[in-house]
Image (cartoon, rainbow, N blue to C red; front, side, top):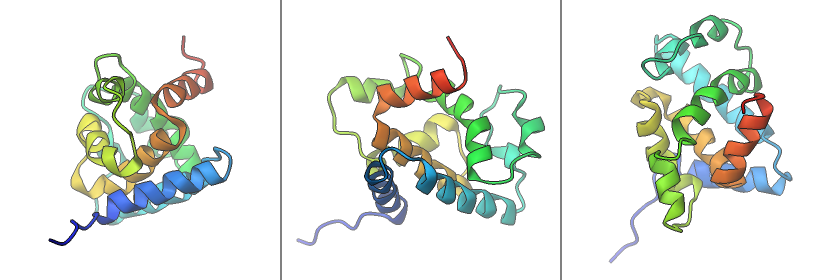
Length: 150
């Protein structure tokens, strides 16, 4: 019986997580991937604000200022932290089971948790890679400290 094929976003997330780790935790590879995801959303005709989870405010004004993957990440990581770092989030519960977290294994969780439309797979993939490369606890602490959250 043939091995099931890993889907492209899963493979891309795993490769991206490895690149982040090989670069000593630098998120530069993820920023480049986010830029491709932003282009994909914009070329679909959807506004960038369409990837904002329902009930979030303030992001829409900043979306106009998004120039590249890094500037997008500075804005969007707050939303990601709020949705994925909460103690009762699916991602946290998964981590607490001791399951191995890879970029490929959590792309779907990131998509579902953030309520992203299918066209935003190019955004979910680097987010999953960042989380997998840093680890969930380190990711949540990093984004909390970077944003001055308490």
